[in-house]
Image (tube, rainbow, N blue to C red; front, side):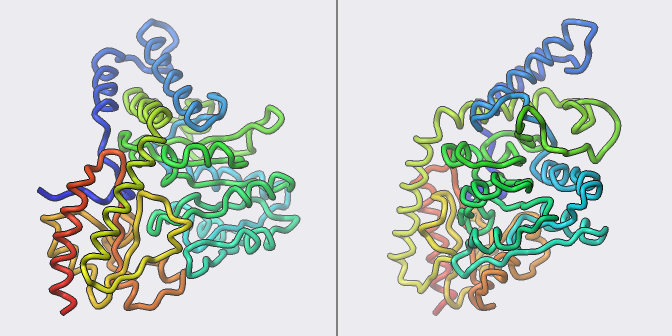
Length: 383
């Protein structure tokens, strides 16, 4: 049986989360915005309980939590929702990085075609942008800085704490895409100063189709983000549409589990990473890690096997393990990873790169066996 090692694309749902959702589907049948009967009140109670669970995980107030369909929508709202404010106040400058998720890159590209100036910060070969490179670009008319916490392809942690601390002293909004860190780097997220934060539940073993946009209050006021869709006043007007109560409950449960188990899961991730790297060392294959390991999360390895086509290897070993060679949102394009290109890696290194990622649901022995089988095939390719 193939071992799933592509958690950065989507983590399998925790069965406790699934049980919670099934119970809600069965027993909380109302619309959370129905005000005239108990069914609506019960559904609304489920939603508000989940909001508190998310807030507890992030160390924020529950009235700063807004449910969306996922991080892609959250990113769009956080960025596009500032257009009117930016134009009104003459703040038409945006700073982001070349290695953001497409949900950010495509959104700021849209704004750049509509009057905004966008500057993209390049990472070093270590996969990490320098905080000073970001901060040196800040101007009087800078509206927004958007930097992801952990890169989805390399697992490299970006200097969002340093950036957030500096921007807290400036009249500049700061957005963090925490999709790959939420539920994992729990203490670190709680220590970041930001105005807006995004994540998707399915990255932390919750359900697909639900996510969160955090809008942090400053002196009791939310960031000047407006809705980008129309149709209702759900989620306090930030995001219209009937609230998917069971999905929200699943998101909340995933966050509650992460709140209580993240330290245990972190140690498990370390043990898996050590075991996987031991297999690489024992294989005799020449390999290199893409990105500086000292800045990498313990749930991800982006590795290049010298002389081995990653596409051919993945096809030949899918019966042993499920890995990838880039972001799931661009995996059908078969173009070189724009993240690795931005880092300055050569074509041979990029074409031989694999992303291996795991999580709380991964069995270490099964992961090791899957990687061992993958490396046995890779060894034949490299002869």
